Length: 299
Image (cartoon, rainbow, N blue to C red; front, top):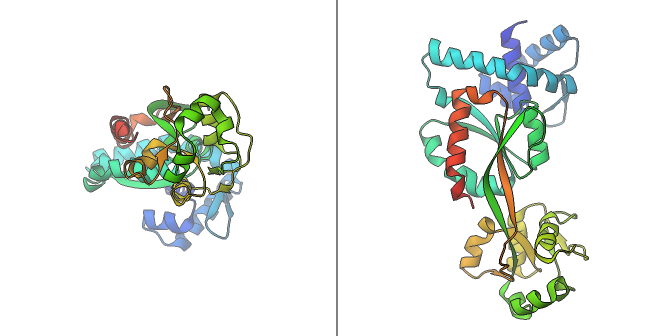
């Protein structure tokens, strides 16, 4: 089987688009399409479903990518290092991570590496989705707020997110900490909640850890971006639970205030996940080590 077809296949699988793959490979989109069709004929299976925007890998494609990626990456690493003399640290790394943490903490911490030649392709999304993509070889590294449990995936704890119950200053005047400490969640009954999803995962986690209870009221506002949740809190919509890193600046400026400072603040571990065996590739191993070293700045 032609290695060129396999290289093109893996590029499309990782990019999720013929257009993005053509840009990364320096080939025209018709050439990419023709190569994928040729490979599909050779393997006798459909590898991608065409979507209005991009493509989605089929089950056989995910299986092929999972088995192919470590070997093809290793071959290209040898070619880059031994045959062309290319610095392996200048290879492209496919990184996945949660939207807010990646945007506000992870990517800013890597600016010097990018200036020195690191090439990043970043995918944002929920932990379960990103870990599935890692297992299917669509990503090289994933920063996950979900503990990796899949076979063949290795997760390293890198930092802990601290959660804070926050509200606008006018809510703090109505909800003194002494009352919340004495009454627990009963003190918050009737107060509008702002959450990132109908399930209110952060609110539920906070209530469980601090109050040993479950929230009983649905969120008044749900918006699937924690930065938007913060803006709603700042505007006075209600109260919310947010990671401290996300609202630290607003807390310092007292645009929002912590409604409670428990003795043991709720913490949630963030993991750095890779597929087994991929740390033998210098460009992945280098970024893996740098992320672990820099994770202390994310909290």
